[in-house]
Image (cartoon, rainbow, N blue to C red; front, side, top):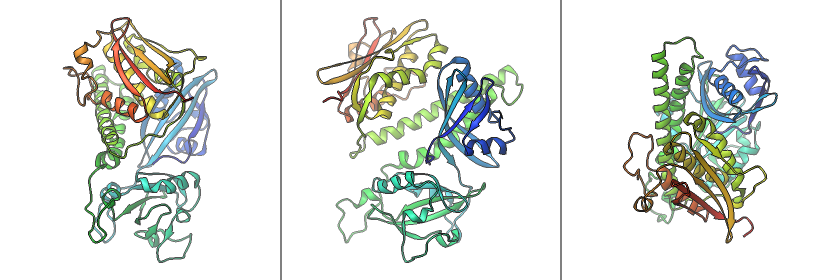
Length: 447
């Protein structure tokens, strides 16, 4: 469930929260911090402090307990001359575990079956929401524009002309019609510990199974999308909580700790990141191999994408003693592609370069355009890739004999799939330094 809009805040040069939107300011006070005052969320404080000290913009997925209610969000910390700016997105509340009255259906199962998740306040007004079904695009747009509205204003209750306010028990298990969707929907309302509700919308009909199915035959449910749509979201939160708590321990923000336990916490955090990366890779694999997969092309600047990707990985590069050179701020490479997918490809390729190039070397990123295409190249000073390896490096689960390096063998396969889905390609060649040079090409924005 992604927040209807980003939550913004500002910290001073001493990492004190001095200005924040109401949601974050209220959380700061509820968990015992002052406002203004030093950030009371240990993992967020560590992120802000690291961004300020290194002078590099950082982001991380964080999870905390707010009055026994789990909250998860993505935080971006951007250092500036006066301190650090914060931008928080993907703010997520988790409903308490319960069983639907009289049905014996667990809340966990309801969440797995739901194709739309919406967080409501105590009066059932929309706070945030996401949709997973292609026929809910119109509803998703209404959610993004409907912050503060009653959720029943965005749907039609079957067999009822009543409007809000209605008690939530009268709406739980109600049948709905959702604009833009031909299917029948059912609403389940899960009370949240901290107040408010989680609204889960599910349909008795699986959309994919309806295609070309005879009208007289009930369609059989299919399990396409099980991992990416259902399991991956359920796994992200607990894994992120493990990583965040391990990092809190490792950085000693929770108190003094013996050195060996600091190392243990670091191992736990690294293992959690590896597991999370595997989940994300498998979910992406399922997405790109779907017959109906499409990207959302727009005008982008490959040079800007490259600078952003390098900034995200700057701390990792510094820890490995590797310098990343990027196009200067005046350089542009207009292209047509989906920004987040291009960033995903570059993070994978640059991350691989950092993983396999030795210390005290350079990863060089260049951009340009030619023959109606724009391109961005990432070259390292590692051992390079032999011609026979280059022919299969983009194969699924191919790791070229490497083991124990934390890779899944899916990153480059997914990256090339994404590049080709955007009308471009991802190739590899030998760099002038003798290392590997990966080149992402996309249609020029002018074509």
